[in-house]
Length: 320
Image (cartoon, rainbow, N blue to C red):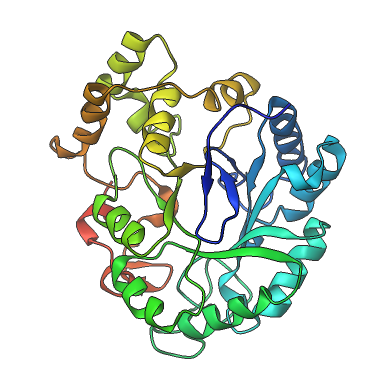
């Protein structure tokens, strides 16, 4: 049975569950772990799965959907265009469709604005901003995918206001969502207001701050823990509910069955509780990225582009 969670209506009328399961495993692939995770999530009531060609696990996600017994039309499935496929959008999408082995995809995102020069999605060279294929050219090719019956919606990921200002004047179809790192340490207030003014919502990846054993970060924040204790709920429930109440879709990742269940059990936060989380990033050294994949490299770049080219404030991403 599907979980009782809100649905957001995208700008083309498509409905997307407000909470989904992120399928990035912290490494490319994941094989049977991804299959079991998605299968368990669907059994637990999830109806929104988010993967990507660059994650290397579309086959396992698609197999879990088929084996779950859940009708395909009850599941919202997102995948993403890999950086090396910017110049071959149709081929990239068709490969994802084959790997997923599904009749259609609900949402297809341009994973990053950078176009890759090689087939190595994460470490290869990229074209400079303005070099063909530009993300405007890539978007135009993505718009063409909607002419068939294999895709319902398109959107972007990791786009700043700067790059949206370049893209949007050329759009025949406005993105359905912009997927970015977002949590109380990095609330993306300005970007949220901008996207909503243009008619689309944000989706938050790493909505729990991408915790790890060595860097628990947001999950172990004493303010958040105190709020969760007051409400007698899990810390993750507080963080995810905060996102959804801000009209942001959230896609946490977990293989733990108990956390899967709590992650889709949202709570109602009072205005006072919400303000506690809204103001968290105002505390010293709190306003920053917590996501390993978006960190600025030693050469000052994010997947080959500078923070200036990405439109990202460097001080929020160049952290320990």
